[in-house]
Length: 236
Image (cartoon, rainbow, N blue to C red; front, side, top):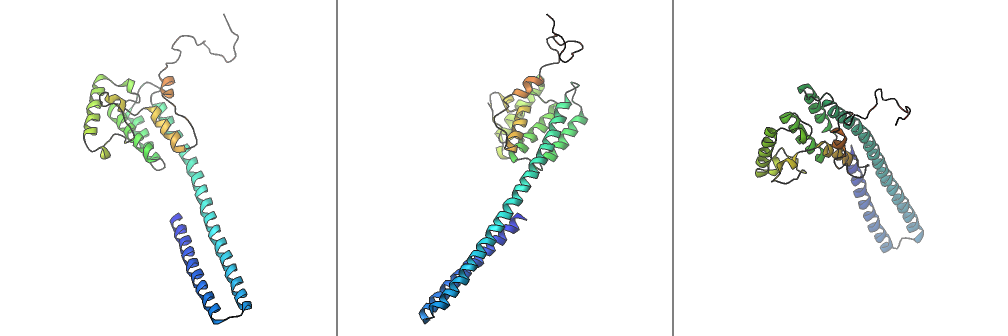
């Protein structure tokens, strides 16, 4: 639809240019034939009105296209929020019971496929590698990887980098230290940051803040009251 609008606007501009050029030639001919000034003024008024109408048509078309694109962007933004929220919720729920099952992995994989419909190419690349890590190792965080998994991932990274970098499983935007292949691991924080940047309305970076609280186990220090009543009297 947008391309059709653009083609139509170009068509109007081309026709207008041809018309104005023809009118200019006609004026030159009229002056050369000694046409009265009154006739010339009438023709000039007609030409001026035509210019004004044409300019208004072009401006209205441009304004309509801008409003359409604005409405589309607004609806797309709302849809992205819904899809991203659903995907993150599924990822967080996967490790609530400290076990990542195949069924949970399948759900996240399918939701990543849906996310690819609206996400930027950068975010899709990160999600693609994240899905690979999840299906190959069954982990969300690199801290959860076993020694064998780390060795396999290291070999995987080296093989991918030594091959065609443009056509590999590693996200193109993901860089790291080849001497420490684990740095190529796509983290949950990077996924969330990719979503934030794709939405284009949030500022700053999460900088590993998400995994910081996720790693903390409930009542790790044994300081939570039982029951933990809101605004309960303080005790020494």
